[in-house]
Length: 322
Ligand code: SF4
Ligand code: SF4
Image (cartoon, protein in one colour):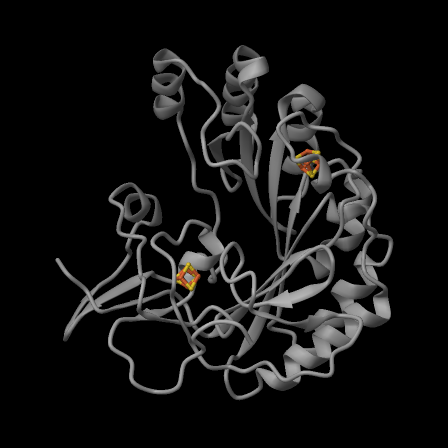
């Protein structure tokens, strides 16, 4: 059915922050510039100033912010505890979510759990000890929401399957577990050259959805005039090629804000390279808080897809290049 509005949970602004190229792993499918250790984490004073700016400028527009921290490995940022505490201090409803390889000790996670709401733990099988990871994160259930995602590396495919089953059988039931098919490079568009048998194996792996944050259970909705379709499945949307909103008004820049590892703050994660608002070292700009007109045939990144889109919208929009 045709629809004319697409929305997620627009109570919060999703701050998608690629913080550095520092990482303690060296995955062969990771773009070298994502873990070459050349770009350090931001200065804590700059990071706090940005939190203040987001808090002030989104006041009355959004109830809270979700800080999704990634880039290289965010847990090796020495100031992460200080930053996370500050994010919670300015608004106790704010959420801290980390994309991590899970390498820190159980003691580190325990100490920092009061300020971390959720982790998405990617298991990089060639460099991970699955028995140790399972034992460690089972101890943290109840303190942090945990999602395990397995990077299904074709170079160690059989080990990925063995480790996946071990994790599925031994992880606490409140921990989610899902396989993640990989692209040849994380920045590339084509999948690793899995055989048909490997693809079938991936599709048939058991999955589990553990405990969910209220955030996750917010329904994605499509509106068809007065009819509302709830609980829209994002994977199906992409597979059905419904992720095309060219010409629509898009709330990237209002529902989401992206910061890349150079500290540039922009509208859209993988789109709109020209819509850079400024840099975290110089916050002398206003966030426009008006929708952009989509110029793209496909909206491919999940962060971008989550932003609200409206088909017929006559109020002011950004048409490109700020
Ligand atoms: S852990 Fe993540 S950032 Fe580090 S090398 Fe692997 S894919 Fe890249
Ligand atoms: S490609 Fe960018 S502008 Fe277009 S719908 Fe996706 S997020 Fe919005």
